[in-house]
Amino acid sequence: MNIVPDLGLMFYSTVAFFILLFILGRFAFPPLVKMMEDRGEKIKESLEGAEKTRIEAQKLLDDYKAEMAKAREEAQKIIEEGRKFGESIKEELSEKARQEADRIIERATAEIEREKTAAVEELQSKMADLTIQAASKVIDKTLTKSDHEDIIKDFLLKVGSADEN
Image 1 (spheres, rainbow, N blue to C red):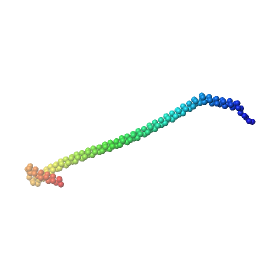
Image 2: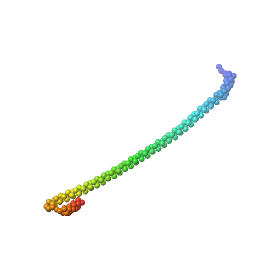
Image 3: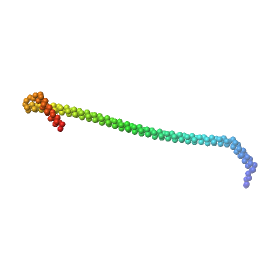
Image 4: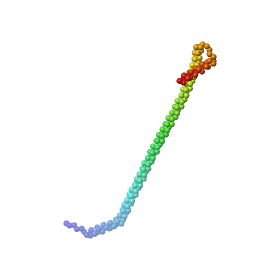
């Protein structure tokens, strides 16, 4: 069984196909092509916008990193200035304490010297009185005022020279 195609049917089918192709090409394909081109253009614009956004984001990130580095540097500088200020305050307070200690020592030394001088004078005075009393008893006579003064001066000279040694 051999089936032979009908030539007339083939001819009409071919003509109908080309007419349909012509109609589609004339009315349907141009809007489809335009729609595809528009869609491609929108995709291209979206990609360009995304690239611009990525570049801006990268720039912002770089700016942020630079600002952070600057802030760290400034913070380090402030910390260093604070440390130096603290050290200068410490040195200043230490110097003031040293000066105050020196003044206290000087005052104490001067006070000790005054007390020592007063004690020596009092001791000399008492010794002079005791010497006069002892001498009066030994001599068993009353001395005149000028005798007293001579004995006291002599004794003070001897006590003073003995104190220096």
